[in-house]
Picture (cartoon, rainbow, N blue to C red):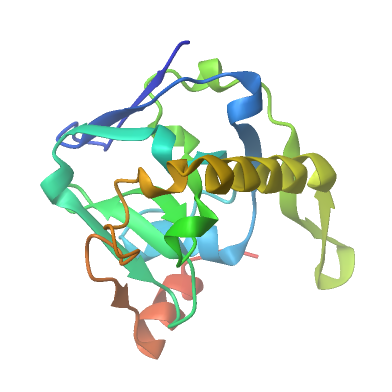
Amino acid sequence: MPSLGFACTCGTLRGEIADVSPAAYTHIICHCHDCRAAYTHLGLADPEKVGILQTTQDRVKITQGGEKLRVFRHTPRGALRWYATCCDTPLFFTPLKARLVHVGVNADRLDTPDDAGPVVAEAFIPAPGGKQRHKGTARMVGGMVSRMVAKNLNGDWRDTPFFDDAGTPTVSPQVLTREQRAAALMGVGG
């Protein structure tokens, strides 16, 4: 099966998403403030929307520069936001627990983003009156849940570059202060 390469902006941290097949991932766009604030916290411009390739952690293989991988959370209970310290590039997000196996790979970090296929879902799309809407939610959630169940049944949830054997993140997460989170959110447009 084919794989998709990825790298941080400067190319120090590299890897691949192994065994890519249509059932192995879901290509989505997210407009939520947290995904966008991951960029602004790291000193980058607000992308306004973030392309994400949702897959399972066992498919992510870091082949070079893994010592540059760090993680932060917007809040004490927030998702883990993984990035490369060499160039402050946001790369992935994961849940707080290894058994949840989900990983979102920032699609702008793929070597060949067009190989990710079409976007099949969009989340947190701004709507009139400050509301939000979603498209393709059933496909997005269905893919996540079916992959999670399969990986928990076959034990592949243990194969992850993000958590150790005890289920603890491989790098201690930094939790942003209220001031850091507010500054990151200030960089996110409407």
